[in-house]
Length: 137
Ligand SMILES: [Zn+2]
Image (tube, rainbow, N blue to C red; front, side, top):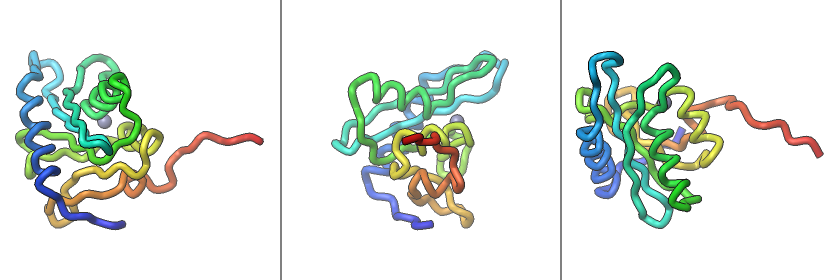
């Protein structure tokens, strides 16, 4: 797995994810609030928060939906954030890893590595043996 170093733009993305997190709220039912920021290949950024519910929607899903709704189609880097997490960064859940793999397997995801260092890795590296649709000729 290739681990890339963060750029100043990546650190700014973390700050955006932490900033949008402040707009989220928790009424005490779920105790889970996450912010997310995504940068497209053209440098446009989008921010979103998770939505609670029986099934809920992770912040990564909400943010990707916002970017797609605005017409974005190529994605560079994404990060999910919680202010009580190491470096403010949260690793994407399995469902989000599959979503990222499906839309953009090469998108870089900012995570904490095994030593607790911030790195960027490709979404495909976060989901070995990923499900893929069966293509019938
Ligand atoms: Zn998720």
